[in-house]
Image 1 (tube, rainbow, N blue to C red):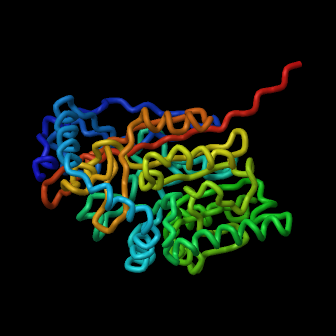
Image 2 (image 1 turned 90 degrees about the vertical axis):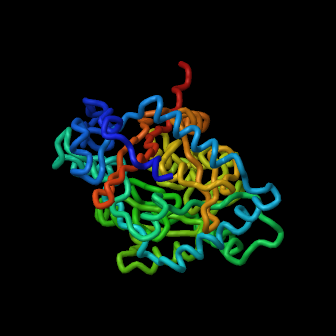
Length: 395
């Protein structure tokens, strides 16, 4: 296993020598995508904690494929797999009961990679102080506790739609909370944030590590943030935060895999949907339905922003035999699950939901432990998809 992380200096020097700037969806020109700290001299590998745009050799790709094939050769028995659906809420509630809001750091990097989160006219301020070619922050700033052991960026995701008759209390709470919120909106012919000029939904908000950087940036702009999570305990942590402000934010419990579940806002009402390390925790057979349903809430021209695990990320290769549920889909030791995407899968997933690709990148980085002289290959997917404008009727 350690051999997977100890790479030759020659191999880590293979990178793209030039990283062009990209145009964002609204015509501005933010900095180079996914950072621009390029390793050109292999002797410098331990000078920084992270290197960007690392290209793998064919030999390294083959070794990763072999390792993934090996650790998925022994799978969790089918008769045991159901509990990862049925008890998903319990697993995530246990996670937040233990860690509260102390496990993750706030994702202040969001605005550098996703300036679309800010209303038109404000997004330029997210990148104007960082000229093209300067490095972006790491995908998930800081590594602490269990992240160091697992090499994973943990993020909550909703559970799945098939509910066992012996549904747990927290699953009932999830369903009831969603229905109550949506029912109240229908009864009053209004909904939270109805007067906002710009609306954002974050799915899988956890304890609010994306919520509060966003909230602090959209106050007094006419924008409004919705945030939901499958775990009632996580949503309560968001609401208990001293900066929670119902005038700009509405947190609610929601199982996005529930095909009949209601949301506290109408279709075609959202400008942005944010999915950060969420879809990977849903069974791959159900992800398409989730994306298709969520896309119905985007306005024409609205943006869906996605970041998640990529195929052969270090965290996939670290799994031991017996933790695999299905191809490239695993269960962690605490019962939460994770899938590892490819670019083609991401493109198909959102295109099949009627969205148009703006950006679909494979973020390959070299993470460095300078104290132990260990290098680790990380792979994430980062994408942006847009809901097209309706076709004009024929004259």
